[in-house]
Image (cartoon, rainbow, N blue to C red; front, top):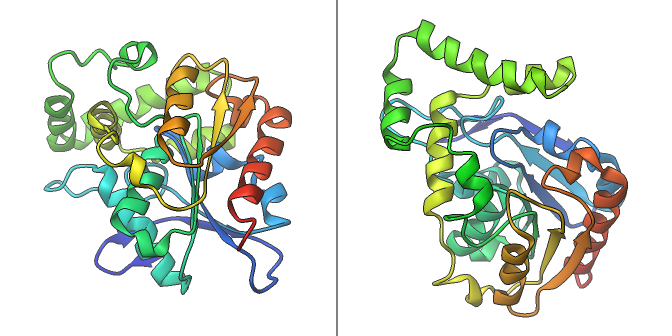
Length: 274
């Protein structure tokens, strides 16, 4: 789907087609795609909601950041509003996982009239200093944006090799072939820029002003985004409800039996008055 003035992205939709159902926009995590992040959730959610999911910029088949414009979380948020415009949907419920959480809250901040509620999963209002993110530092201690610039301006063969390294790591983790195909479209420069954006993200000055129903799904054995930070996020949002999932950061994929029911319940709660 082409979003006017923004670029072309990949969009998945699901649902019964019944009119009047709330629309969820599923926002995936860093280095993933919509299909990878939400593969177990599409069908259960589609029984009760109209479901839309897109690949973020630089991820999968999402919009490709230009050589003159790096990956920014606020652009991802604006993409959500542009997608709603393109689909003729007045208000949506952003459902964000990990990096998708900042995209979801920024969608509310930048387009409050388009957001009916928020569901935030395995995420935080800030990521700097997290042990998990220090571990995921990609060995770019000389500066992530400098590395991104080098990747973006590198010869095609160098960029191809960087992508192959990412794919090889995914293959070593046991991902099936179709999943490898999904991540093969990731732009390595955009991934590094996205990581820098996450490290700099801090919603503390404005998160307490959220005025729509919100739910936080906490992954209680998460070593990437500490559960304490996830609970802090819930505490900072007025009236937010909390669901706990006994799983790690990959629970959406590795333990759908635990994660998906909590996700569906959280979405029901947020949309209960819709």
